[in-house]
Amino acid sequence: MNLADSALFLMLAVWVKDLTGNDAAAGSVFIFLGLPALVAPLAGRLADAKSRRTLLITGNGAVALVVLLLLFVRGPEDLWLIYAITLIYGAAQYLIGAAQSGLLRDILPDEHIAPANGLFTTIDQGLRILTPLLGTMLYVAFGATAVIALTTVCFGIAALVLLTVKVTETAPAGKTDTYAGIWSGFRLLLTDTSLRLIMIVLAAAFGITGLLNIMVFPLIEQGLGLDPEMLGPISTVQGIGAVVGGLTAAALIKRFDEQRTVAFGVTALALCLVGATAVVIMLPTGSPLALVLVAAAWMLGGFGISWSVVGAVTLRMRVTPPHVQGRTSAAMNMMLNVPQTAVSIVGAGLILFVDFRVLLVVCAAVLVAGALSLSPWRRHQVKAAAETVQA
Image 1 (cartoon, rainbow, N blue to C red):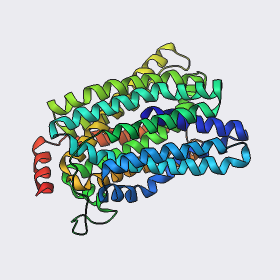
Image 2 (image 1 turned 90 degrees about the vertical axis):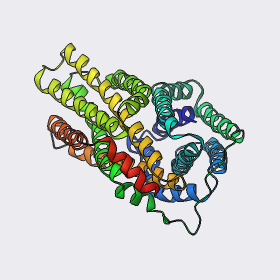
Image 3 (image 1 turned 45 degrees about the vertical axis):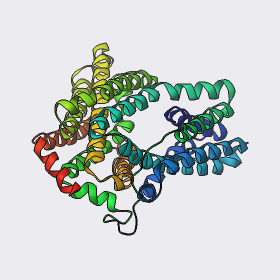
Image 4 (image 1 turned 30 degrees about the vertical axis):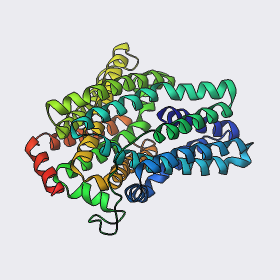
């Protein structure tokens, strides 16, 4: 499923660019992919109200069929069909993610949640290094049909594999559910003492990553004096850091705890930004050393992303009741993805008027403040919060 996901979304943008020759039309693919975040609470409520295993089977099967509709695209006049399928595809990912979170909670004992999340993050980040390249290579060599076929087969296989999974599921949330309502996932995340600060800090941190997506091009061109194509190698280095971060996250959680692991992750992101800012301010443009140091900083940022995500997701799964896993999963995804998308849009305008070095300093300051706000936490707070929620 991860293989299909990463291969498809980049190909769609490239395909739209080829069909229309318009950069805005191609970029709109990512807007339609991100818009379903606004209905994530509905997806979470549905995931808690139905059998998660059944939802995963039908959801993966439905995505396989919907993606096949892309075969009817013939030219620019069918652009609406690509956008519509992208919108449906994005919404399905929130439903699948919410249902998967609940099913994993039913399958795994507490001590296996962190290793499982670390493994999923490692697989996801590893595939993000390889599959966009795979998707574009298939598209260039054989056209969109090849990527559509790959995506359909992958989601179809996922549905078939899930048919073999046997698990005793938590009973779906009924009318007597204490946490009724589509917004209850947010209420749980923001009223729980162990999750509230983490969610606020991570929402800000992911917003910063959205701004970095815009600033990375002036950083490479103006700060390092290199061609924008260098984004590929730098992104690969970051991906390697994220993969290793996913592999080590469970060990950090076992040695310390979830929120300290998140604190380490945000600290790594802060150091990434502080280091990159210092490099572009202090070293001359075109310095080979500057490229090495920025790449090292970006790798550290990869560690930070994985540690932050695995720590936060593991804590959420552990301290919230099983029958609300879908809602809390969807709420967490929305709280992380919406700021990232919104700040990216704002950043696209800011970068026209504000020097990217100034924005780097602001971003670094926000992340340092977030890291400092998490550092005083202690293990007993997690235990107390977990006992409160379970009671």
